[in-house]
Amino acid sequence: MSDSCCQTHSPAPGAFGIENPRGLDALAVDGETGEAVLIMVEPRAWDGTEERIFQLQEKVNAYLSFALDGEMTDAFPHLAGKPVRLQLDCAVAPDPLVEQFITAVREHIALQDMKFAVRIVGEPLPEGEAAAQDSGSCGTGCGCHPS
Image (cartoon, rainbow, N blue to C red):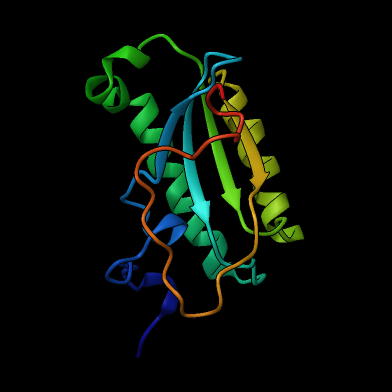
């Protein structure tokens, strides 16, 4: 008998964005605020499932660990002392379940003087189509770095 809550969740080969909690999707410095911006990507439309919330939760936890446990400043010493903002770039606006989760995350990370932003960046990928891996920046005109 299999209990789905106890299964090990491994990302699919080539998974990108919140499907892969182990990867840093993008990192930027906001030229206006000076914040280090840890960007997670969700190229799919939200589907209202608990699995998607679980994926987002795992990604948020990995990013928080990266920022709070010193890994970020070890890997990127120039970010030491900068305020941190988590940012979710998604194809469409989050559904109510995701919004509820984001509200809870915002309240929790505010205690660490961190922010959580959501940015709607475009059209969702067709189901089953893989996202192209980001090269490490979120692009131009995004507000994360000066034009």
